[in-house]
Amino acid sequence: MRVDFNVPLDKQYNITDDTRMQQALPTIKHVLNRGGAVVLMSHLGRPLAKLNEDGTVNVEKFTLDHLTKPLAEMLGTRVSFCPETVGETASKMAAALRPGEVLLLENTRFQKEEEKGDVEFAKKLAALGDIYVNDAFGTAHRAHASTTVMAQFFPKENRTFGFLMESEIENAGKVLNNPQRPFTAITGGAKVSDKIVLLERFLDLVDNIIIGGGMAYTFFKAQGGQIGNSLVEADKLDMALDLLRKAEAKGVKIYLPVDSVVADKFDAAANFKTTPSNEIPDGWMGLDIGEQAIGSFQKVIMDSKTIIWNGPMGVFEMPNFANGTKSITLAVAKATKGGAFSLVGGGDSVAAVNQMGLSDQVSFVSTGGGAMLEMLEGKELPGIKAITA
Ligand code: AMP
Image (cartoon, rainbow, N blue to C red; front, side, top):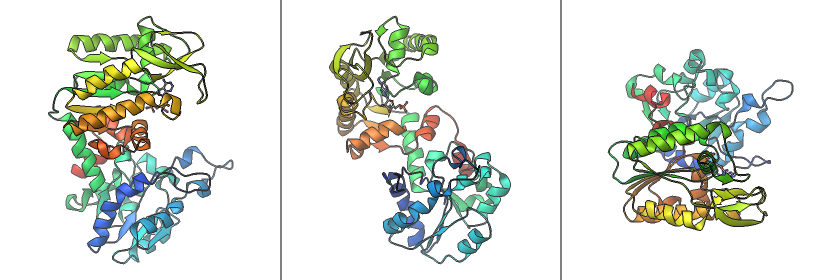
């Protein structure tokens, strides 16, 4: 079973947020409860991008063994750890598993073959089990050995999605296929360049696009506004104008934040005040949307029947600049209560919703940032195709 156990760890290697592990539990337990044994594969971090000085893998930092004990506690069963991903020990340990037992393999990304999608490596992984289950939606957009390539070594009836991945696909389907209207996309976060494909795609899907966060200032700058020291991508000004023009031609309404909470430095303790977003004085930078913007965004959200949200409205990690993101989260929760379908996808908006304890008040919180974005962008994900093909 390929899971996404790519959890954040602190300096002592304690898990600081075990959401991803919790979310894989139903699928693991399902197999165990039905008399199966589970061999678990996952990556953790990017060990090959952060090698030791002598070129070796930093095992101490990136070993999945940090997760063995917490996982055993979560599952209430024995979990053994295999210090290799494939090889003689892995084969022996997998073969020795009894019903109800779990084996956690070492980080798949310790092997360069993983990210290359190496067929021989995938074949060795496949030999460790009888059935291939993919529950790692977060990596479904990567054609890696454990996420995609190994599926081909199982007959169609012996490869399947886990519950998490199945529900991600189902919920993405709810917004992509015949969504109820009005349909509103809320986008934010730091960079326009990361979101441009998504924004273009939204033009063909939605009725309204709300743009907040740091990316909004590129739009204000492109329209001739004064944005002080706010985030801007100077080489994306034409792209921003082009997007606004296309939106108008397609009848999609774009909402930018009319006002901003601006700060005199990028710091939690900075001085701050509210100004129009296109009249930000030199030396000040927009770090959150202002009250007027919140009001107008809330109105659009409350009138919507389908809502997708990707990217925070401001620097929500700093309490003084979290109000916009918080207010929008509350509005999405309220609209959901009133019958709208809401999907929150993409790393930081998920973190924001979780930080506010409101994840159970939206319809669906996606675990797969990049994978969900690619799905919304209309791409076919290799990890999904490998199961269904
Ligand atoms: P992204 O990964 O592109 O969704 O960006 C998320 C990050 O954007 C978060 O860490 C926010 O703190 C940051 N962010 C949001 N709004 C702003 C802003 N106005 N200025 C600078 N950073 C921002």
